Length: 140
Image 1 (cartoon, one colour):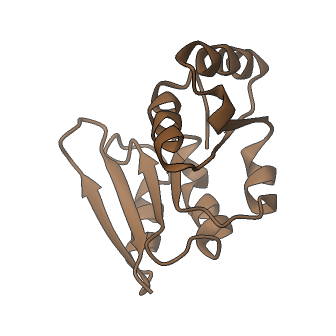
Image 2 (image 1 turned 45 degrees about the horizontal axis):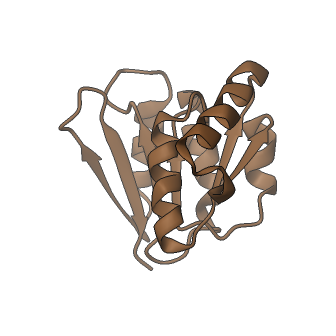
């Protein structure tokens, strides 16, 4: 969720090229979307990516799933809602990750409280980077 210039997306798409998966990205900004398409192509991973130009607030709940892995780096105030919209689409072992959870952004504390309270998820926060990434994996 939030394609931007695809730094993270290229690595995820490269992994998809090895595992047979498909990366679905969502970007609301038309300029960043065009840049993302060019960057995926230049990296040689475009055929493993479905790049959507859309408002994630609407599209996330419409995507059919299932999703083994979700990487969110969009508006932090919506992390909780994105998780709620995708929770039923994550199989056991599936993970929802959220970037920048240690940067003090609005909405992040509520999100972490919510996911940590889910009985069928285990949540950890990776603290080796300054920004932090939360990883919430479905256990049952």
